[in-house]
Image (cartoon, rainbow over all chains, first blue to last red; front, side, top):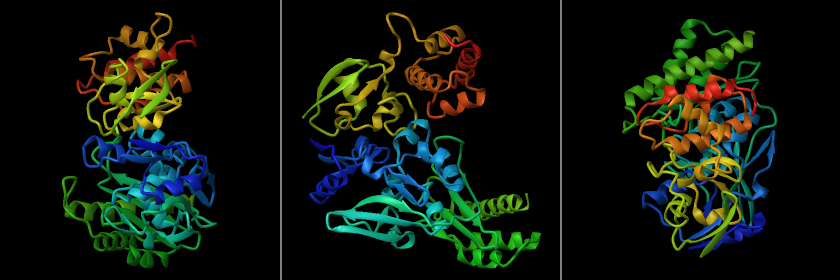
Length: 268
Length: 154
């Protein structure tokens, strides 16, 4: 067993290029280790690497933990952060870990899709920025090369005025999403809908967005059509957590509910 | 490799030859079996400890990553033979059934009262959301901390 506690990002990147396993909060990797699915013998420890723990309105360092995001993050991301695991998990788990693991159920990911965030990747040979939809390529599969680290999440300068997150799960705490969703709405009506746990990667319901964005004060019929389109656009599977049919239904219900919350805040 | 860290105020060393968790090292090498091993995936909170002052599941901490850190386990919350007020409160309320979740709940509650001496019932429940009591003995546990929250600061 070998471990490096890098003094700076450059040292961490050399270790990653050398094949060492990156370890941040441990809330994903250590489960794999405890269950015998992975046995990393050479680890680069990122928990105390301040270089990737910066926090700005348009840039969240990969090492920022959920505990901080639930207090200081943009509204819908903070709402998502509050539903991640438990206090113990939020004290350890990082947004960069959520992005690097790229679980379809990652609670932080729909927000990134909803606001068109980019993922910053760094290696010893430089940095690159990937839009979220080029970064996430499949179930726990991303465009990150093995010599790269996720170093930050970049957000647009002007976030939507209204943004709401919610998730469906079997209990309040310590639950992996059955469906999770972010709806954002700007003053001019532009609406985005992003969902998690209903496709291999986080996804946008573009037809539903296009339909509702032109409605300045949606009628009951428009809201129902919006929900129907969301349910139609998602591509969930049946697994041990839920069924395809339930997820499809819940996605529409959840998106509509969040849109209505946005509209109520718009009216207030 | 040898790791060194502070455990309940004392310098300790442990030998880790494989990617063991902090929980394993505490229980198997350092004579601190108070933190319990149950789910090994961070869902039950029975292995809760404070790592550099923050409440975490020790089963999800790589032991090698605590080099130079400060760890507090349930063994370290009482001082000079005196129970911690959180432990006293659980005693008064009879907030123990089989006892397996108790160490994790004590550590989580110590963390809560450190940050917020007078938590509301809602805040108490939120703070304990990561700790499962398989006996479902939450009623007495929450009452213990509601009573403690209503007391004047010690």
